[in-house]
Image (cartoon, rainbow, N blue to C red):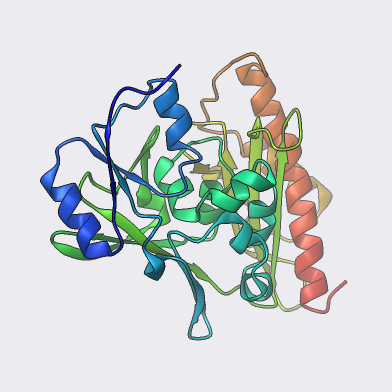
Length: 295
């Protein structure tokens, strides 16, 4: 199927993009196009005007923000994120998630901003950014504003970015030596969307025995990327043991409403969440202990 007719406008500055978006009623931002164009071919999206921002050089970068954060321009490709030495040093869960996105061609063109704004609940980066408590900087005709990850994803394929706004950059924290991480997903074939995806961050005490903080991001189990809040609350301050991690995995499905499709039933997805949360917690704890010198 072919997309409906549309007007194409290529812009080279953020100000120009905002002006065009403000002028048209049914404009849509085009970044890498790896999510939007397939939807247009299926006629699930039919914008009258495509505003191509891929030629804006100021939106593709990865740079430190002091010692505690890294800023990523919205046009930074998945491949650049996957191979960033700075992110590998400061926030390694993000390159790990990016390396598993689709295939190399899509990683070469797809962008972190495009994936975030597309807000597909089954994609890899949104639940990872949720677990990181990332911050999203949005620019529009009224200026700029910063939205925390927990508020950014509003509904299925919907975010806080409005019709005449652009996601400018994303800020993620530097993970210290007491932090451990894991990104795991279950899919049928390499490169497929995850049937279940789990991003986990844990921070241990100085002895490597107690969980000081836990964040669990989930993909493909709700209309939006989400956090397993019940499991996170349960694990807060707990001394690590196999029984505790197993119980947390059991609680990780509280409040979830996964759909059923040809790849698995709702109950199947809930079962897979528990399996991958337990495995992810074990992996994250191991990494945190090694990083903190407590193997």
